[in-house]
Image (tube, rainbow, N blue to C red; front, side, top):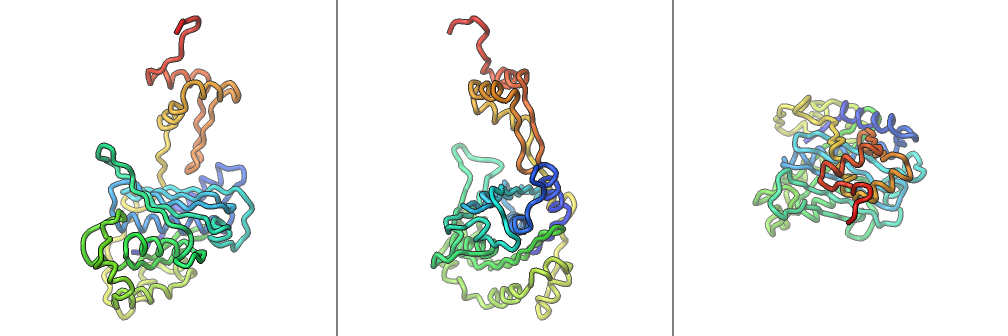
Length: 313
């Protein structure tokens, strides 16, 4: 599976640059977030999960957190929180995993839940089996799939200002059906790790793809160069409204619910100190402002009304 994000990726970058005082992401952060975005879209398209797939990488470096969310219709949004200086050429280790305590989490949040059902989440460290730091997002996710799903996976990822792209090669499970929720895990699948000759051949060819090629060549050329001895079948690409595109799910109603969860007393404290409650969306940079008239209305609508002046309780 191969993804090329153009308009969606440009929208993500532009919204961040326009909505932050510090401007655009540094080059190394842009490449990290772009690779994560391409990988998350590939995983969601691959598993066809009826819910949100959220890919997060967090640690103790200048990039405190990077998050990508992909909906089942491939609507995508992404953001990164940068808290320190970043040098051009910094790898995942310098950006996130300075003391080798960073983590990668993949969360699957179903659109419809059974009573009491919680989102599924898998978490892995940003190091390999020998505690060696992993310097690429692709290495982390390949290790994740091997550890959690017992499935051989090859990922090639790249991003620049115009494009976030990725190629995913994955061995099909020996038995059962699954979607990152543990149902691939079986002795048969585990026994097949590293042994499937067909997968090994295709993965070796895919691994030869260079970053510059992934960013500069069209899909047909990439596949022809990599697999020129194989019989290729190209499926109809998912694009436009059927394909990946930027979309943020924030709204004034969602922010109102968040304020309501703070409680009336805390909301009033913020109003007294700041004069208004100003909430900005990290994904799209949209700002929502609530003043002394708006905040009481939020709690009045929920039935949690402030007491009238002079009342006895």
